Amino acid sequence: MSASPSAPTAAPALRKTALNPVHKKSCAKMVDFGGWDMPVEYSGLIAEHMAVRTRVGLFDVSHMGEIQLRGPQALEAVQLVSMNDALTLEDGQAQYSALLTPEGTFVDDILVYRFSPNDYLLVVNAGTRAKDFAWIKKHVQRFRCHAADYSDYYSQLAIQGPRALAVLQKLTNVKLDAIKNYRSVWGQVSGVHNVLISRTGYTGEDGFEIYIPSDETTGTRVWDEILEAGREFDILPCGLGARNTLRLEASMPLYGHEITEETNVFEAGLDRFCKLDKPEFIGQAALKSLKENGGAQRRLIGLEMVERGIAREGYSVSTPDGEHLGTVTSGSPAPFLKKNIALAYLPRAHGEVGEEMAISIREQKVRARVVAQPFYRRPKKQP
Image 1 (tube, rainbow, N blue to C red):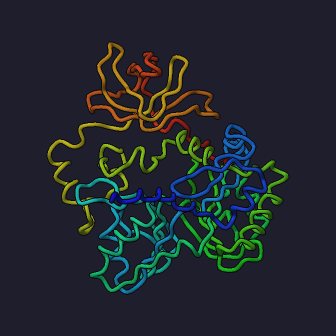
Image 2 (tube, rainbow, N blue to C red):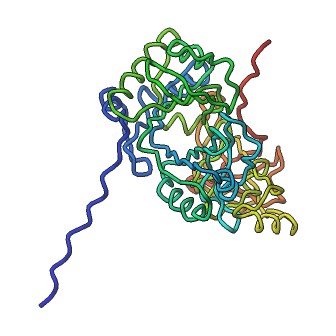
């Protein structure tokens, strides 16, 4: 007697942020982003991208993860699991860092906040949240500190663009212009107490990320009040599509694209954030050995299309005479620059600025050239 066929396994339900009803009410285009039901665009990617570059935009990034390390040896724990030097942080300061494998490749890239000498917050990517927390817990259990995943307790909103400060200042008594880049304070926003206000972002623009309670009522009210405060500046709600093109223009890496568990710190060009001379951290020995033996054999380079065409992820990059060199990791039109741009890994012997390349697009070789990074750098404030 043959066994009856098993029923197909149902796909896990998409997770939703507290603002999910707001996005759907606003007719945002929703997509599956790493298991989350997230808005990819509202009024349109180009309009949203340009709003952030020239005015101000508002993002729901509540899918990001927040992991706290607290206790007498919290610093030692952070130092072991992250590549940057947390000993240099002051209270309220943040730094870009990464969790590394023993081979010196990426578990994830993160932000590390110091709130006090025994209290740190690690902000991790949404798609790697569970993996990151398990990895951190495994490696810090020998220290006198407690690792806790507080991701579900926070909604994170990002107000980004040259008018971000003017918008958020309407909703708080905190003097926002006194907060330097990669610094944070606790304050009141829209009547909500104990909000973390951080001068950080993932767009290449000035801006703030705020952490509020994750209930729908609070999130909806704060979201609506930010949009109302920004009305005079033509603020736009923005989706993850614009967030991606903005970070690409600014040459900011994306986990799963420029950085993976097969990519090491040196080839990703992120060694300025990796402090090899600090006390022991995971991946340190491998990276020291790599450096002593000639360094990375490839490097991440920026490409600008010379001929019409868009270099998409996975497309082949070759010399003009057809020698395959590497693969595009990210590519799209750059709305503000009005160019088509891409990032790709090439052998170390190639990738000098000005070098001609060819991208394989629909079986056609399309001309491109290597350009300096970042593609876009925000203008300095005039005195």
